[in-house]
Image 1: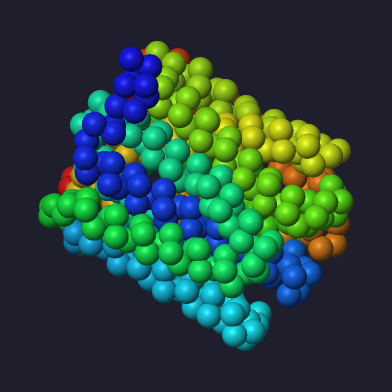
Image 2 (image 1 turned 45 degrees about the vertical axis):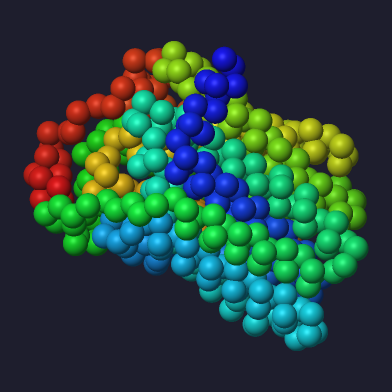
Length: 424
C-alpha cells in the first residue's frame, strides 16, 4: 500500500517511458557538470572560468526559453524532446573526441558548453511539459514529485557513474559516458507517444509580457513564480564555487567534489520520494514550510561545516529540501494553467529557475577567486530566509500556502481577465 501510493504515476506506461528517459538524460547532465567543472578547474585553476562554463550550460535559457515553450505548444512535444536529447549526445561526444585527441582548450570548451546549454533548455521545458499529459490531474503532484526523483536524483547517479571513470580513466572516458546516457534518453523518449498542446486563438503570441500577463492572472501560480525566483537566486547559485569550496575551505582532493555532488543527489532522491508519498493535500502546507526553511538553513550549515564528512551530511539535506520546494512550486504552476499554454508557462518557469542559477553561479564563482567560498555560501542561505520572511509579510497569497486549504487553485484575477481572454 505504501509503495503503491508513492509510485501511483508508474501505473501509466507512457509516464514510465518518460521517467526513465528523464533519468538517463538528467544523469548525463549531472555527469557533464562534474566533468566540465573538474576539467575547467584543472585547465585554468579559476572558479571564474568554472562558473562561466556552467553559466554557458544554463544561461541560454534567457533567450531560448520563450521559443522552447512556443514550440512545445505548437508541435509534437515527444519528437522535440528526442531531437534535443540527440543534440546533447552529439555535443558531449564532441567533448570526448576533443579531450581524447588532446585538443581541449578554453574557447572550444566554452563554445561546446553553449551548444549543450541550448539543447538543455529545450530538454527541461519539453520533459516537464510532457508530464501533465501522461497522468490524470489528481496525480499531478505525485507525478511531478516522482519526476524530480529522476531529475534531481540523477545528481546522485550521474556523478556516481562518472567519478570512477574520471579518476581511473580520465575525462575523455567520462565524456563518453555522458554521450551514451543522452543517446539512451533519446531512444527511451521515442516510446512516449505523440503529445501536442493543441491550437487556440492567440497561440502565436510569443512575447514575454504575454506570458507574464497570463501567469499573473493566476495568483497562486504567480506567487510560486516569485518564490522560485528568490529561491534559485540565493540558494542554488553556489555550484560555480563548489569545487573551490572543497579544495580551499575543506582542504580535500578532487574526488571529494564528486562525493559531495553524489550526496546532494541522494538527498534529492529521498526528498522527492517523501513528497511523492505525502502528496495528499493535508500535508502540503507543512511540507512547504519544511522545504522553504530547510533550503536556506541547510545550505548555511553545509557551508559552515569544518570537515568533508559534516559537509556531506548537510549536503544531503540541502537538496532534500530544495527538491521538495521546486517540485511543489512547479506542480502548483502546471496545475493552474491550460494545456494550450503549458509549454510557455513551463518555459517561463525554467527561465526563472535556470537564469538566476546561471548568473549567480557565475558571479559567485568569480567572487570565490578573490575571497573564500565559505562566507558567500553561508550568507546566501541566511539572505534567502530573510527574503522569504519579507515576502511572507507582503504577500497574502504566500501566507495562504501555509494552510492546507490555500493550495486550491484560485480563480483568475479580475484585473487580468482581458489579457487571459486574448491569450486563450
